[in-house]
Image 1: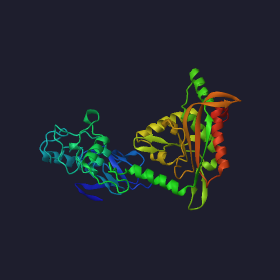
Image 2: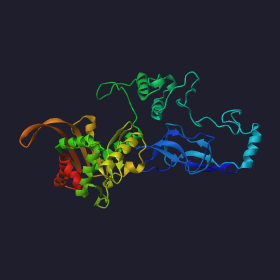
Image 3: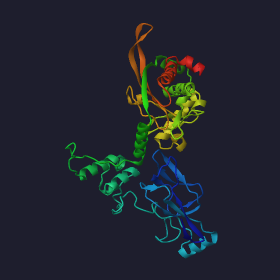
Image 4: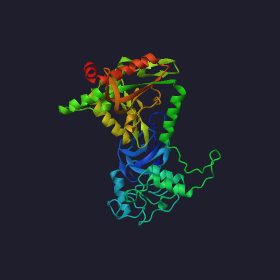
Length: 426
């Protein structure tokens, strides 16, 4: 869509398809304001998809004329996102400045609201920290709301953030503050099923909808089976202690588990693929993108170490640390979030022993590890205290039977129990 604007036409950039067939994204933060001059490929807005927060670059150069949406607002793919007018020529800019009567001025100084050359407020549409439909904040009562999700929650409940007391740092209004305000103003009849009053109704976020859809699809399409085994981690812990004593670099425990998982997938490549139901074919991939289940503030995501089969244990350790940090910050790339071929799940970080996880569709397996604790264990006929953890494997029964699953698990378990030998032969 284009409209006339001086020497050229105003070009409107619509929200592009950001991958995974997503139909909408939420505006998290505008990086430009109306009146700003932008260049081609300059990031103009941060949007939140069902998987991550991404910066969207502008395909046009010129001056921002319209921001089509507020921070916290969902925008459908293909709908207008930002309008940019071509930059005026030097002669036209001079004439505009003369007509303004003040020449070039510092942004925000020396001009009236309608005077050319003045940069408008950061938000051209909607309000700044105030729910739409309410009066703007007064100078002595400016609500502190930094999260677009908090603003949206208040807006959907019909509440003004002006009337909500923030309990966060420096009066920051948190999600809990909004939920408490909703609970205080909402009265619902008791549920006909339970006889209890409804304490809260919380709309599902786009991220949670996407997660629910993926998990439901996995359960409905994949005939999964689960096997598990207790594994002795004592020698692996001892190996890491020896490296530390020598002053050598010591990879994290997850890096070793990733390395051993890659070795097992190399031995059993049918588990590093997916099922093409349309063509009734089993796919095996030439290379391993190892996904790692990562808990973030937004929920569970599974970024993948791309090309994990090419990395050493030290390299895997560095990449796992970078990748999980990026995922928690919402900065993992679309490729990292969607290109995984197998998933590793460390639920032991939550201090639990075991789990029958749900396969990350369209993958065909997920390997999980519970917490490692001291337990009585028989070694060479003698009772000893060893570091034991449970390993569980959920696999797609269309791809293989129990024998393959057991063989895959033994490769990983044997490597954990005799790590020095395993690493020398990987």
